[in-house]
Image (cartoon, rainbow, N blue to C red; front, side):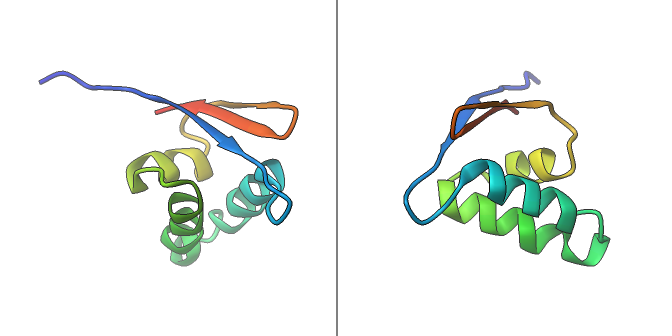
Length: 74
């Protein structure tokens, strides 16, 4: 069984700062009961699969910030 990875680029908009939203989600994910909720906010905002969003907010995968864009591979 092969594992597929994909690189995601979460861009900011006038209403949402991607780096700010990801930092908020990482802070919220430290509480196990809130982990799925904050991951879901990121998943829904940028149409990212839930499994990738959970990896991002739990910092299972590294991410970089390029200007106002968050980039990660999951």
